[in-house]
Image (tube, rainbow, N blue to C red; front, side, top):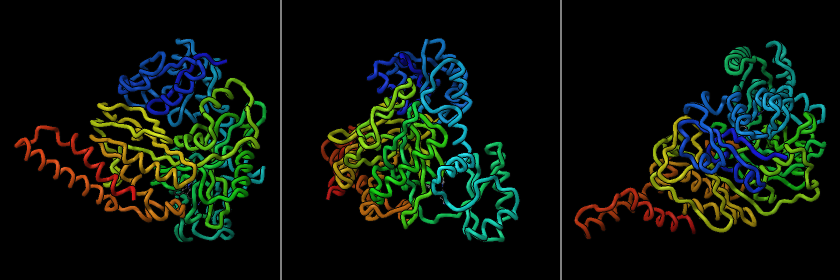
Length: 497
Ligand code: MV4
């Protein structure tokens, strides 16, 4: 049994993992960078060790140092969270070699799924549907021409070592083919140290739907239904929900079975996610498998009632799954908004600075997974996501309205966030109808879409300034702080119609 876990991560996910560990009576060790000394996850841990300067390359990516911390503190396991070392097969192996438990899949599973070509070959043996194209490294332009005779244009060239959209190139016509292959290969070589590329027919307006799987070390594997992740911008997801509004029970079951097959194809254990593209006719195609806990896992937790981190720990200890597929069911609907320190009105540029006001929404069905407190600075060194706001409802419409209500309650000043984007997106007719694909943001969103929100805030500020002037002669109160509550009053009236 695991008694002490080193959490090799920071921010909201470090805290998220520590909370589950504490409920299980497991002690936690935080490793942190010099920039994170005052962070809540460092405070929350039973022990904390500074592992280096702010830059990830000198702290959160130092696998050997983190393993040494585990040894020195008498920990018996390491949880990698997401990002950083979570999908690094060498790190997973080094943890095992040090006599520690890696809370995740085997190094071999991570390695197979890290190669998109190896993943496709494994999936093909189980008859999992894939986009027409190649399953072996492209050897020549002639081979590409042969493949395109069958698929037609447009096609995508993808790097085998890529993933998550990295190293992808669209080719529209024959005349571009040779040049694009050359560019894709050289880009893949410099970015990943591996120039293997493959071809897929380009699916134009797909949905991105992923299936959560859970496997134990005794050969049992189940799927925990899907997450709809189509609302993204430049491969950065912004809104995720479970279940997807477009799947029928039959397609859900078929995709779930395929996801379990992909997991079996690499002897998977732990929590994993199998990504699919779904086209307009609801054909689905396996893309890749992510061998970690994902950012958006809470929506799955909200509709299944499971704690995925606890399940990961149980599985890592060698425990058996406590439920069968038949015992799992979807309860209600959950929607998550990623609250990032980015300015949606300015091309989603990262915005750093101080969280001057930070007041969380509360109430029934609202969950906030975050990693900062009011008054803290958002460092420039890491991912700009400061929180995940999740709403659960008995059905999709209740979840949507609840998330809007929570967004209106959320008070953040000092930095710009994606909260206004969320308010806008959740009110779009296409979103309300569930009728959208991965082009949702580029199709509907313009910075002007948020202008009415700014107008409201400006009007509220003007009214307040006039009132203060009348009663006191000149401003006595910091205007930024006092306009905030006023602005959200205006917002609320506008949203809740
Ligand atoms: C595709 C595709 C269209 N056709 N493959 C992007 C992330 C990576 N996992 C695969 N991606 C895509 N692969 C074929 N054959 C379109 C995308 C894609 C995408 C996928 C999921 C979510 C958002 C996306 C945004 C642009 C492109």
